[in-house]
Length: 117
Image 1 (spheres, rainbow, N blue to C red):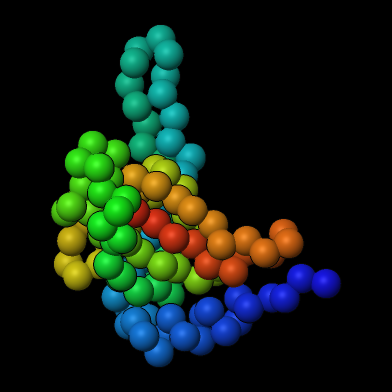
Image 2: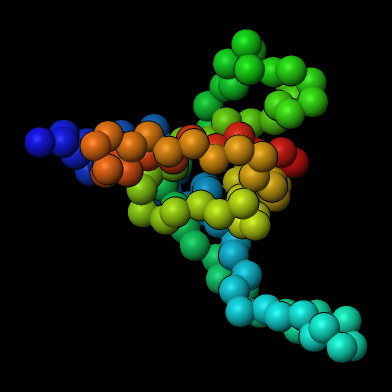
């Protein structure tokens, strides 16, 4: 049986982070008219998430795919991040470079993101 630590992850990230500090901005339902080439914007939703900013392991920095100025973010499993999302924290906006899931026996425990501002 898989050990589900997702509730503990959320509890720890809530204590370590600030619940109002991290958010995900997501646009859904937009479309592109192939005849006119006009993009119709979708609905923009801001999703609060529980997370904490951590240091990037310097061994991962290669200067191309992951840069020294990138940041690592650990999120609980409340929202599944997508590459098109905009991550907001510290008054700045970041794009997602990499998404990694901590998944034990089919249960998502946490998300590890590398973000770039």
